[in-house]
Image (spheres, each protein chain N blue to C red):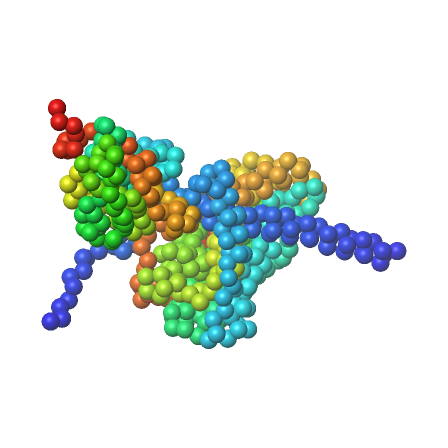
Length: 176
Length: 368
């Protein structure tokens, strides 16, 4: 049903429009002066100023692989992360750990572990699903490259970002 | 013998005019256009608690240069469905008239015995309005030649808007012309320098008789400034290109340098408008309270060069303040609705301007 919108009744000085202009100018010029005198700071000059120090603990940045305290690569190439990854950014080629290796009982390790950072959506499902606590989302967020190939993080790069993390998974450690 | 002298003086005048054209239009107005684009972006940013372009050069001052390079390097695309001749003519037609009107605006008293105005015409304001009204052709042609609906609507809106407001713009300065009894902008400024600015009649003869005339002059100023906003297609009257309704209005189909010409034409028109407003209402190049004001009728050569330099700086300082006012208003007011715009032009300003003329006539009659 059509209905008439009630318009406010304007007094004659309001109809003059000039007081309204003055009022508006007071607001905009107020903001102008405040911003110029740096009393109000809103913008962060990004490449020079960063917010890294105030990132929360649960921040989800680039995913990375970690080694444990005994320098063993934690990933056992179960491929759960590869399967759960919604954009299919992860590619894993598992290999058997040779029997003369110190960690032969772990049986499997990734031969190739690649995360395509163009595809990655930083959802953190890989971290959630990992039974070995081998993959973590770090605080790196500025992942850049000049080619598609450069944007694929291989195993080496992933361990480099990840580093060592001591964790709860002790099942592969030597019996004490 | 006489013929020789005539030839020499003609040559002298030609060279002096050429130097003035280059120095004023190309070395001052055009950089000022670029600078006002920068100022627009920085000021609007500050008003909205942002930073604005601050990366290119100190304070981002080289941003217009970067923009210019971008415009030059972009593809200059002409759509298949346009009328090519008119399509190409339109951008030039918006830029050129704005620059042409510079010719009669006195930007200083005199320097080294040379009057600081390119053409010392006795029909200054008339010349400005005659040439400035040509800019509407640029926009109309752009809208029409683009052969697509949004530019067309923008062009149609622009036509009616500019024609409507030209009337009140022209009528608004009639009281001033009546008061000064003069159409030469240089002499109008000279009169203001000695007898008080039109908007600030606080010295010379101004304190006596002109004080009463301050009322019609203020009304004139309000009409003139508002009409100037409409004529230059700036917010709150940017109906021809309002992007929320018409994509980009009359320049939707334009790209690269052709678009840049429309863009710069708008700013050039704004600067010239500011220059005219300053000249008519705020004493042009003159300092307040008659400081350093040359005596009426003094020969151009009698004014020391440093007085002339200060006068030129004063003029540009005033123009810049006016430009900042333009920018501040743009980022303060929302856009008018189209019928409101037309109502304001035809039902308010037109009548008000005529009443103002009559009021001025009565005051002048009473004073005399």
